[in-house]
Length: 74
Image (cartoon, rainbow, N blue to C red):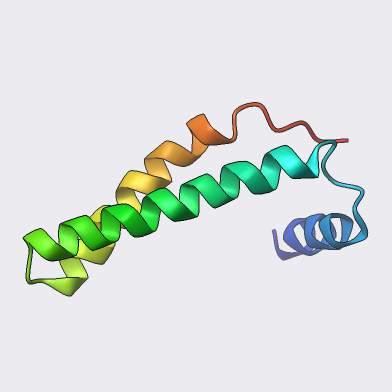
């Protein structure tokens, strides 16, 4: 499993993994922004930081397949 992750990371850094890097990084930026927004909103509503981090991570983790469904690999 480690070898597959290492090989994919090397291809990504060489620029040979994805067909459209702009789309990928735009979607990742949207996910990070949404994650931070959810984190801040839940933090304002709740005093428990651990619960806030868990909930925001869960929500963004569920949203990632929808955000990255059109990513094409080479």
